[in-house]
Image (cartoon, rainbow, N blue to C red; front, top):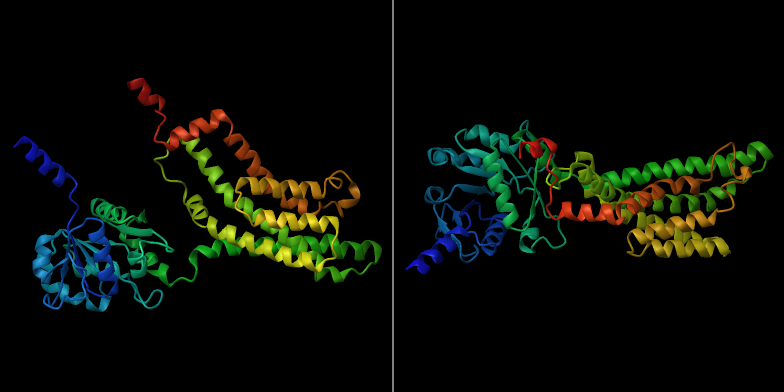
Length: 406
């Protein structure tokens, strides 16, 4: 008898929340299938419960009113134009958590967000915005080749946490975006073109313009002004082939710099259970895109290297580009930086290479990579590395005020 009671208790302890879904389209069916695979009982609310042949097996199909009596969390996989039917069910929605997953056809289509409109329509319900950035395909494929981030916002912290727990149970990564005021921004995300590429492309463009102007000044304008020598032909090949490796090397270092900064922040805080600053979060989210842009610049460097007559330095550049295309992480960065330093080892102390007092472009290109390598060297020293590993395994530093109380 005791064993039977313990077994029942264990089963109930791990039982997942029953989820209701209004909407039997592609997204609603995909969400229901994923919830069932994760162990959640699923109930579909439908105007016609008998017509349920397309719904995933294992899900229960009831009328809207019957489904609301069984569940506390309801996912609305509906368009904004279809919200009106919920008014007839308002007495059953008192205290229920409504998860609005809708999107619009264009950015800022309405004065208020769909979630805010829903909250005004049903003031007794608790509206949470979320799951609108996850596609039906991503739910069906288990987030393979798709982002697993779920942006969530809402005015009730407890309800918002419940929705985030559902997201985690599906293997997704919920990100708290604050109050329901953020819903309009979240609804615009799916309509933005390559949002994670904007920052990397902006950085690459800025670096390209800077190095182009810089190289033109020291390689084209300086000879013309001082020696009346026209070397404008360099604009076609030589100048771009100075730009590409420098930009590529800096972008490669920017891939690893946020991870190093994050480690030092955790060291200073003595815990991993605090959010990083927003700018660092954003930076870390686009590291893959930074790496791909760096690879593209390295590839351009390879193409331009084929055009230049083969010299010893060109062979070194070819090796440099091949290293950059590998996946050796910090070793790649170290070798690339070492190559750039060796390439101009005899120019650092010779004043003739400092035209108008300006250093060569590659000298500027290795500044950030050297900073990253120095910080990483500090980080991998045994005493620092052991502490970082402990923090990332869950250890927390106890503040002195709490130590005194203990």
